[in-house]
Amino acid sequence: MADDDGHPDIDEFDLSAVLHALADDNRRSVIAQLAAEPQGSEQFCSVFGLPWAPSTRTHHFRVLRTAGLIWQRDVGNGRMTRLRRDDIDRVFPGLLDSVLAADAATRARVA
Image: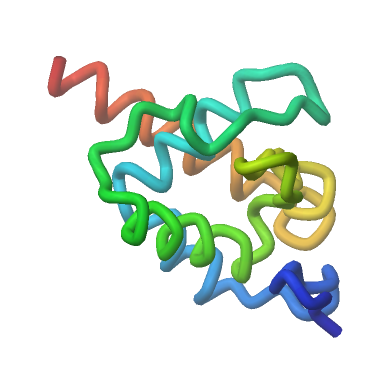
């Protein structure tokens, strides 16, 4: 059962929700930035350089969180975010690596 902050247990992960969360370029960018950090690293939401107003940022991070892609915790006036790589890889082996590789290839072609 999901906790009070909307973090689902791994047995609640839904492929449609994960793919929906990863369908947005900016949300994928957040996941790519987290994946590039050492495993277990946390980042404040403000460091991602997103072009969203605070309320929109809250919505997009909620989409990532409720899909099970990230963990978030409150720290002072901000939120720390980390990738749930082990959980995602356990439920959907290879999915995250495939999506991130395809995203990097697409961004390289466009650049």
